[in-house]
Amino acid sequence: MSNSFFGGVHPNDGKAATSKVASQKLPPPPQVVIPMSLHIGAPCTPTVTAGDTVSLGQIIGDSKAPVSAPIHASVSGKVVAVEPRLHPNGSMVMSVVIENDGLDTLHESVVPHDREDLTDPEVLTGIIRRAGIVGMGGATFPTAFKISSGLGKVDTVIINAAECEPYITSDHRTMLEHPDEVLEGIRILTRVFGLPLAHVGIEKNKPDAIELLSKKCGDDIKIVPLHTRYPQGAEKQLIQSITGREVPPGSLPADVGCVVFNVFTAYSVYRAVYEGMPVIERVVTVAGDCVSTPSNFICRIGTPLEYVFEAAGGFKTPPKKVLMGGPMMGVAQFDLSAPVIKGTNALLAFSGKEDRNVDNPTCIRCGKCAEVCPMRLVPMYMYMYERKNDLESLEKLHVTDCIECGACTYTCPGRLHLTQSFRTAKEKLRAEKARKQAAAEKAEKEVQKV
Image 1: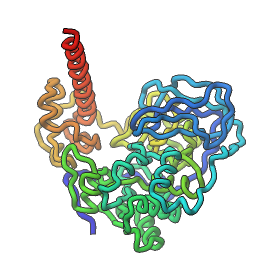
Image 2: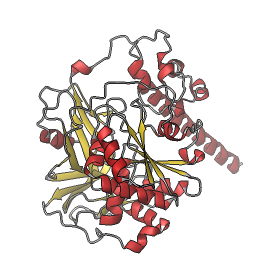
Image 3: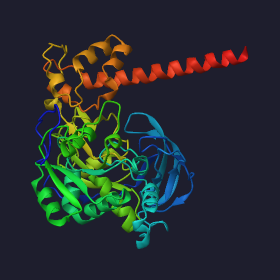
Image 4: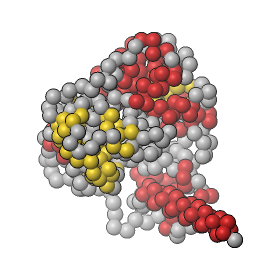
């Protein structure tokens, strides 16, 4: 029996177009562009140079920083450039460009691990790190660091299979097509923490996945059907739904004894441990009213977005907006030469018919944004203070606790750009913090000179 969380909305899930469409392996493109920033944390430094020949699964970027994850070649071939290229976040990021030789020659490191390694938590964590596994639901937080920072604090392992964002069905298809691998990956994650049970939260709009995993799992995995409500898959809301525990403002899941992993992350853990395969590909849902043939593709990391859309038949009408991710939290794309990255679970293309913007967005003080905010924030005041550049008031209202789910923007009758204003507010606070820190360091140096 699942609990509930505060707030939330019920958008049309839009999943019918792809929920029954089996994942297809997309042939790798002639060239891949692999950014050295595929995760939250320190970017990697390229370990290859132009002219090098690389194999599939070979490490091509790494970092000694604790919050980071190695990056691997998603094809075999020749490195033709190591230079800044466009990242889906809109910035230019150092990238490794590989000309695909079409052979998929495996690197010598891509081998299954010895069975005796599968019982040692430290060894398993090392395998997970070397495989470059991150939060594959879109957050891209390095999985090995999440494990290390939670050891000794966690009593509950939760697998996020809610997939609450509209249109996206990549996790759904993974559960249907690879149930045994997903379940074994979950067992590995549970074993790392020395716990006897994992909870898997799946929204009830995926009854086939609930039924299939329930039949296949044993007493060590509990399938928890969840009410279909956005943002059910947000980490803190999922914890509350499954355990009844609330993560306090400014705290982390480990502070209430929980750790959450995405279901595709669990599948990736299985592949890393039992096949020796690092993260070189992921399932991407391609949908939206502009897409000719809505599909689920297994795409290599570094595949250009335009190549993926072409595989789905291209656009039947020119899109007004293209998103990487879902319509609630996705990032708009202005150039389809950007590549698929580890956090790419969907590519959506929408026409103007889906546009709900108005010329003069106006707050009517209805309070609906506060009613649906899952973090119990007051978006109408946060918006007002961001417009006034009142950073002190924004901090008092805990704007940094905003998970940017978009529920407030979705429900606002005045069509305010609420979520975007909170992203801007966070950037302003970060910049102000950096300014104060720089000023303090400068003052300290001045004192030392006296």
